[in-house]
Image (cartoon, rainbow, N blue to C red; front, side, top):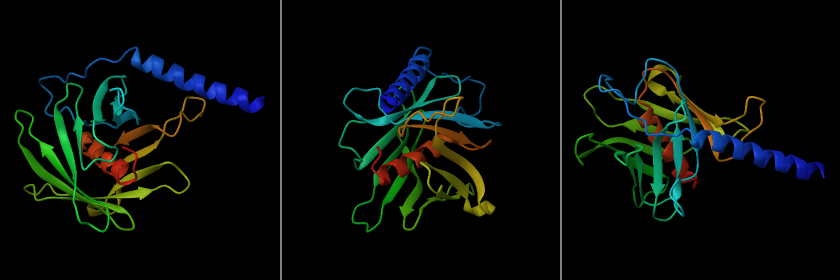
Length: 215
């Protein structure tokens, strides 16, 4: 009986969380004066639900700290398809990820899409050997080398900057209620450090999900 009650409380907690969140969801519309809607001077927190809002598709939905949907991934093809798109709430593609064929290990290319056109530019390479490493292409001195570090015994990881002596860039961990109850294996909190492009971080999170068969 105690196990039944525990499972019932767990399901009820998840239902209440998503009911409250979805009841106040509305499109995220950045201010015209903002230099970039995907970068902030303060710490940013997001909730990632590893479910698509589109029926019978794979993907995930991302909310900001205000409960607004800011990113979505709707994979209409097979799970872990060879090309997947990160979009904003209006369906504009921000990044596309394309799996490289004939590679012994997981290898993906990330393309950044232009805001005003359908043009895209190769932005980074992600490879997996013992760990997942993400290296930028040449962008006029704006390069980076990120590494995904798994946290032992936990569903989550850290993204660190190898060019800055392992400085923390972002952290993904299971989302909990204020009383410390986990909301399941498909609900995460993503915390991104200041002055970091969180759309890029979401693209890297997608790479991790694709390599590990989560998207």
